[in-house]
Image 1: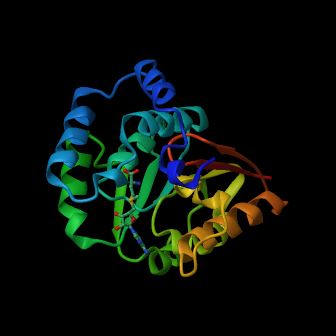
Image 2: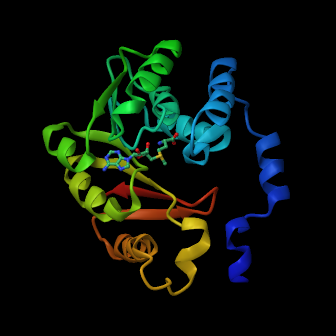
Length: 219
Ligand SMILES: C[S@@+](CC[C@H](N)C(=O)[O-])C[C@H]1O[C@@H](n2cnc3c(N)ncnc32)[C@H](O)[C@@H]1O
């Protein structure tokens, strides 16, 4: 693949066809998605309709009691992950940017999920040790530099047979090439992909959707 085209490593027509054959967001989530694109900086960080539906599907398949998300942004993916919770279950989502707190809480309430999503404002590296839960499903979607730390910190707290999902693991295709000098994020992600591949605590599958989703199942 030509380095210049790595941003578009998935055929856009295939992506569009997949979008057209995927259940659409409900009205609340579609309005939320549009609002983020109009009002927020960096709307590309949002999981969006397609990946959001995948997260919802995975949650509905796993039927978790306890979900952990690292990197909430506006709370869109936390809402998707909450869809498959068992009665009494909880999504714990961690977000470092305190300016996002009101936005997250407002939309979680609009989704009717205030009793099922607990927001932790703070740096995940500091918040994680205080969450002594056993998780059925974890979604890692924060700063890439700390991805390996997050993976190693949370794995002991995932139940046997539970799942860890890691987003952006293809990093616009940059993991295919030697990283330019100073590109620490690509280096971390390449190393982590190799580490997970060799990690006998999990089995894993890298899904080349959107920016790459690594799915790990704890053995
Ligand atoms: C890609 S966005 C998350 C998108 C969201 N999960 C979704 O799919 O809609 C990454 C988020 O991680 C947050 N973040 C970055 N570093 C963090 C850290 N050390 N602890 C907690 N959150 C962090 C950022 O502020 C940002 O809101």
